[in-house]
Amino acid sequence: MSAFVVSNKHITAILNSTSPRYPGDSFYYYYQGEPRYVNGHKEEIGALLLAENIRSVNYYYNEQDTYEQFKLDLSVRPLTPVEIIKACDCYSYQACETPDWKDSEAYAIIDAIRERAIYNLPGYDEAPWDIH
Image (cartoon, rainbow, N blue to C red; front, side, top):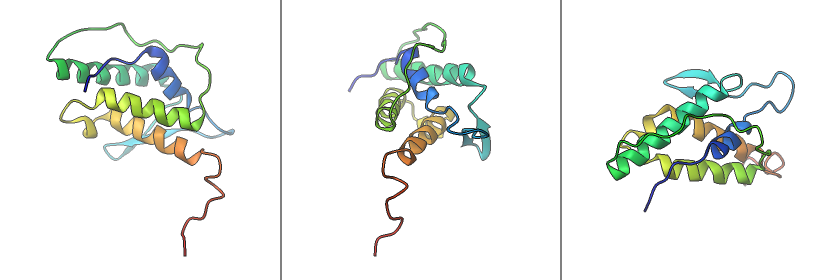
């Protein structure tokens, strides 16, 4: 296994999936029992995600490397739900090396974004909730 630091573009693509779907929609995730809103805080949350990824890579390789600061990449196109899920999975794979990964705020963010993408998969709303 190896780990790497994902690009600003990668993190921006993930964060762009939290854009409102309709007027009044506001994406949030829960961390330590409190709702935290993403919209209006993408630069801050992107920096948090990048920092967690860097922490993971440094932990894995026993290094103390530093990287450029996070900056939203406005050239990133919207992703499909499947692309969002895959981008979240890639990020998680790169950021999971620390023992406390599943307790981190980055984990909570990525988990919520991935879950929303699943709900947006074509056919999800039409599929039966329970099977008899």
